[in-house]
Image (cartoon, rainbow over all chains, first blue to last red; front, side):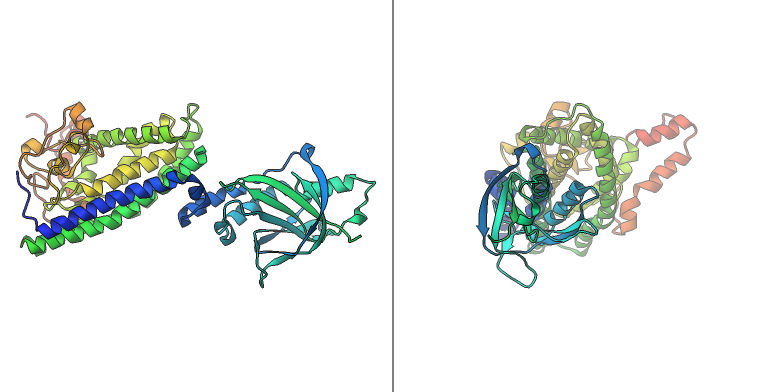
Length: 209
Length: 285
């Protein structure tokens, strides 16, 4: 049995193209598996979009885990992120989860490096509406659109969100709320290499002593 | 890796492979046309036939998009109610790929042997020219049939994303076996579907008709007795040649032929048999 006439140079080119395709596709299939951390971190744009979706798994720490620890001096941090107003009287967890989902599909999320902390900053508390502005994003160099975390002393609450820390402060009658600024309180979320929340610490701004 | 990451991986990997395969397929078609020019086989009719095959992707993609969206909804709706969902991991991903290849064999057999389905699949076989462009040649109804035949995999408890990914990989495999540039490939011929095996499948010669239905693996044909090795170069196309390049004629060539048979049916049983019996079936006189 013989095939129709084939030009030798074209046969060689065809064979090389076929080998290149097989090799390339094998690499394309294998590369993400051989470096699962790079895959999860999203070295490829498409993978990045999928992986960053997992950031949305915002989980409220157990109140029993709350640990007020030390006071820390925080330098000014500039955050480039996405903001929304959270209304504290209405399904707060759901609103925050929704905002994490928005953040996950944002340009900032797609550029996150593995283990790079994400900050959640609570600003512009409105007592009449009982609402607060929440901004999610990484720390960057200062720019026109960045939000600045005011430098100063912050009381840290490990395994706590800002809202839980505020609740804890409200319940601690002895300490009183005058100690705190309620200006740019924030959470520092540490993500693991798969962009899953690994740890969170709440920072509550304090008046200078 | 977690189940979520496995799903992300197989989805990304399968569609990426499919996309890149299309890119390489364009390269293969270019080289095949260059070969025809250098060997003086090139002519206007063959070139138009190649373009005609590639153009069938336009209506095919339109229906594929709609049907795929419906299939995603249907499969996930059913999957939610399956109590015996199979865990998502590397083993289940490989298993579903093998089963999807078997499903492809069964579907392929059915669409050749059931006239109603052959209406759609005959488009893929109607070209007298056999090159990589033939791998693009599909009926706009093909996606519907595929959704039905892969439904059992959902009922078995496989995650729909694994099933879609496996379907995409089996489909991507088809692009390298539609050509007359590659001869026989030694030991690979034993277990893989190769260009040689698939040329047989496209043959209209009596001994080649309804042979070699496999997708990736040819072992299904060897097991179920539908294997035929390539002994001489086949004559491609339908047993009643279809030479039109008109996109409408290409898509609907078999429809009036079935209609002619149906209107002459003298009973409901014969009418029904025209639909489900193999192409060419006629009632006994």
